[in-house]
Length: 631
Image (tube, rainbow, N blue to C red; front, side):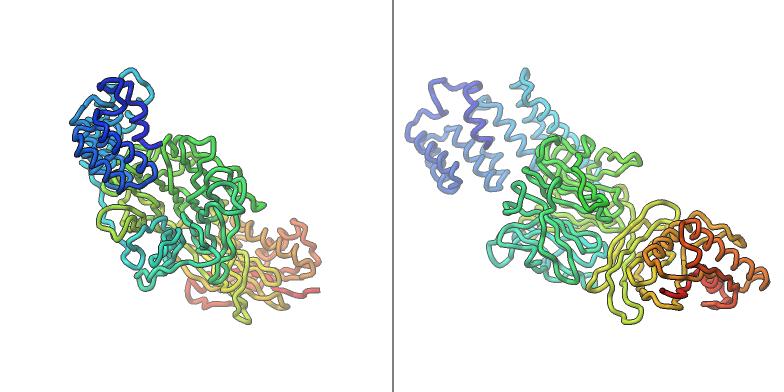
């Protein structure tokens, strides 16, 4: 309901003009012009309405209602300053005419950064309604915003936004950016630059640190209807986005999902219930592991009109019933555009309800050890202003943000900007392992399951390599040791131990087909120095070996122990035999028939690297298994 209608319909209880007059003017011709303008306003014929209102003022320049309607038209046209001026003209005629004029004027002043004036007008409004509780919470919240903004302006945070330029931004709006973890592909929402069209999804690739001219992502993602508010997974292979008024929709707007195979997107599918409902679902954000989706919904059970919700992917491929993260995130106002960082612990979002500068502000919240979210922190001024700041995303290293804003100086209505985050609002640094899986003999790309697990914890990160090009990407916390394992039917399992100190890595992984005499090194089997007792970190690797043997029931294998050339030959022989036997016994104890197993210690007789270096000796100290037969 438009504010003007609210003002005019409730005016009787506060107006100081005679009760028999419907409007402030006594002149019939002026009233006739006003009523015609009001009809045209309701039909959104703003230019004609303004013409008639100015004609009414020529007849009666003290026609206060005219200025109220002019203010509303100015606001509808996006000219808030002109709207404020018209409200001031109305109050100059009669400053006690109606308190809602002060409220409307104060809201516009807050939205344009005139915080002291807004405080004055909010308090003036309160002076009229001292005994009314209807607006108290709203006004107190707005006064808090004013005080917060005035404090923030005195305590500026570092901020140097850079417009992404004409290859991304245009005279229309670009917003909702999403970025692959390797910073190579930027996807965003916009409209076709050459024609008046509904919202579509666009993408740009980065070449030598420069974004190329954005292109329409095309079918089957885009249609003749609107698609937008997308989120692309860390590896760039899954996209979730919003589409409205679809035949297969559950509500007015639903979330859809598409997979990228090679260079092509599959036909989008409605992600279904319980995520989608008869209400509005929009602005999804996928966690880097693909196991949690955050989104915005108007469904019941929330704190306000638009709330942020989340759902988790279960082992059976179904999503859990969405949960509301509660008061720590959501308010009575709108919370929008969630972005869960690649660390899966830092949430950025936009809010009109938490203390801010006016309009939509950007906030950060961090997940605590108990799973709850911390109280949101406003990113501060001048990152947040009285303009609308929305759709913040942050790169994997946690230091660079991209967001959309209608700030002055852009190419159009909303543009996409980048900026460096000051330390207090940075996310945890996350790195990625990127690679290609291929056939060791034919060099052809392979689709396979990939798991990377921490050696010191139970966290498992998994994905599949692309069946067209064999590529994969996984995001991980830095500074840890990980076990990398790949399993594909018809091939030997692949195992590696990787240390990720502080930088991203790229690896090529050849998979060996199961053939007689092929040897597979178990890189995540660990023993203490000069010991043969299996360490705890070894059991995940051994469990995968057990699974491999259970799936390939006819295989017979030899467990091999190898050492470097340090120490005596006799000692190394004994050590290698006992280590191989430890693995052998573990397999038997886990129901692998001993008729399928042999074990042998080779000491230092079969080196695979130079024993003159520590690195070489480390490679030579290994446990492996050899395919003896497949009967």
